Amino acid sequence: MPPIEHCEAKDCAFNRTSKCHAFAIQVGGPDDPRPNCDTFYKTTTECGKENIVAGVGTCKVLTCKYNELLACLAPQVNVQVYNGQAECATYRSLGNFLDAYGKPVFN
Image (cartoon, rainbow, N blue to C red; front, side, top):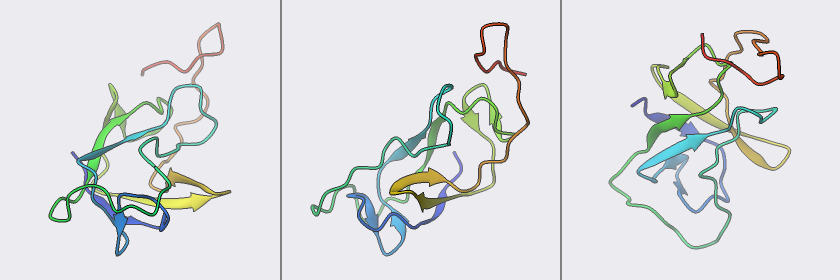
């Protein structure tokens, strides 16, 4: 499971000192236009375990070059904030691979 190397989502419950302290994050979904961190949770309460640094548990962004059968194979992951939403900055598009119904497909 690739570790979250750096997280810019300062208002996320799991972020302390730019590290994610959730057990794992989930990234996006097959219909999401951007690779959002679905684990992002905005609150002032510090959550997670301080001695844990999260990894990517599941990535549902099927058009990412690091995605293999919903597992992220990137060596490490960075999370950035874009338009108020935490998202995977490590995402790299394979291009547009859609089936006849417009849904992303596995390679």
